[in-house]
Image 1 (cartoon, rainbow, N blue to C red):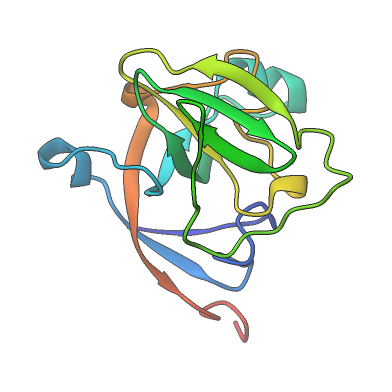
Image 2: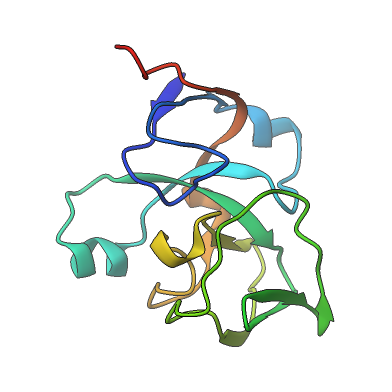
Length: 152
C-alpha cells in the first residue's frame, strides 16, 4: 500500500512529491519503536477542529512510547527528563507556538507523535488528548520514494 502526503508536515523527510510505501502488518509481528513513521487515524477532536471527514489518515513520527514522560522545551525533545537526540533532519522555528509543550505522560497502549516540520505540523501537541491509541495506528512507513510524484 502507498500514500501521498498532501502537506508539508513531514518535510524534509517526506515532501509532497514523495510516495510512502507502508506495511499494514508491521505491528502485528513487531512493536512500535521510537522514531518509526506511522500512518494513523486522526483523533476525533482533531477532525472536529479542522472540520475533516469521518476517516482521515495522517503520517507522523512516533517520539513518545507508553509510560514515558514527554516534554518539549525550546524545541528540544525531553523523554523522562533527559534531552533526546532526534537522529533525523527536522524543521524548527523559535516562533513556533508549540516550541514548549508538556510535560505529559503517555498512557499504556498509546503514543506521542510529531511531524518533522514542527511549525507546520498538527500533531500530539495540538490534540485535545495528546496521544494516539495503538489501535488507531494502521501501518508503518517502510520506504519513501523521493520525487515519485514530481513529474506526474
